Length: 255
Length: 158
Ligand code: SF4
Ligand code: FES
Image (cartoon, rainbow over all chains, first blue to last red; front, top):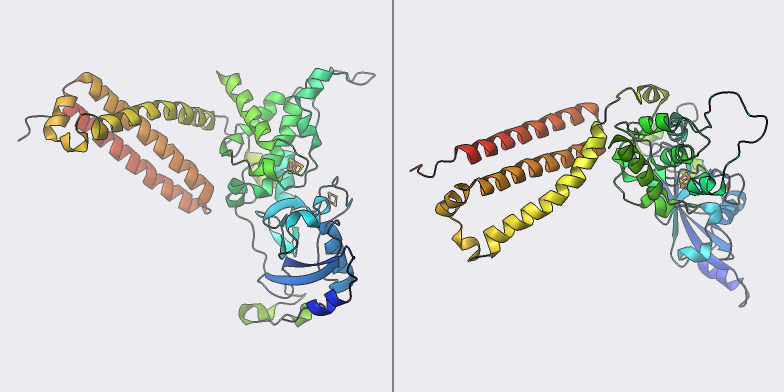
């Protein structure tokens, strides 16, 4: 297979000695169902400042080298959660990963996240992920009349679930979970994180119901405390801890 | 490289925009129908299973390490273990109880662990079901046989 890149020598010769640019190789997992049933690796060599992000390199490739490269991104600033991918074997947001931090001397591998159906190149079907999210009722449930002003809450009560409010639904955690890889019926860390956000909210009244949902055979008890999710979360949420807190709430409710 | 440059081989040769390749679906994906089933099984089985694993693990750590020390290390090591040694130990209800408890806890702990492994890794429902049936049958057989031996052991068997 021919790849449309400059020769290494040619590329390096053209660059002045004090240039911040380096030549990095991006080894990208490509898949196009309209061309072949198998996916394959393709290498792209890109001239890039190592202080740029992996997303910038993907842009460079898409805009300058191969317009067929397909990936999701929206905000480009780590807040929309659309560009989670497996970079050098770890789930990260392409827009939050600096090239200098991931050993650019060696080829940088970029793959779609695991455990979800790949539709094209780096794009996966997120529907099962969002289905699990919907199943935990991720919205405020209250009874009685609506107050005429905000629902006030003390700083301590807010602190209780502060960590899990930071989730951007990028699926980095769920698609790093070995239980989820093998059995997509498991709710997955992200759904549990978002249930935790409401279960421990003092203004919410459906915590009991959500606990019952997560008491299911595909709920929190399938968690093996692998900690992959905590390592993967680009928002630094202590995902495994949140899951353990839900387990503890279930146990103290029973005994 | 444009997609048209990809050299097509074997089974891939026939794919085109009008005839895309089938996607490889992730195993047992969650669908709205799965959602309907959640919460319907209102039992605490998985919760009790989880607690049992923790508690039996603690007890087993004491029982098994004690068992290994007595059988293999203390008082002459493994060479002392003989028919007479076993018969002597099982004359006492204390050691009978120790071994019985160890048998039951170890078997249930191990079986539950394997059950979760099967749930995690067997993709097809049929495979899951039959692997678990095999596991349960083996567990029940071993536990019953072991219990029978502990209670009906006859030191004068010869
Ligand atoms: S918990 Fe973290 S890794 Fe998981 S979906 Fe939310 S932001 Fe992404
Ligand atoms: S593009 Fe929005 S999180 Fe990366």
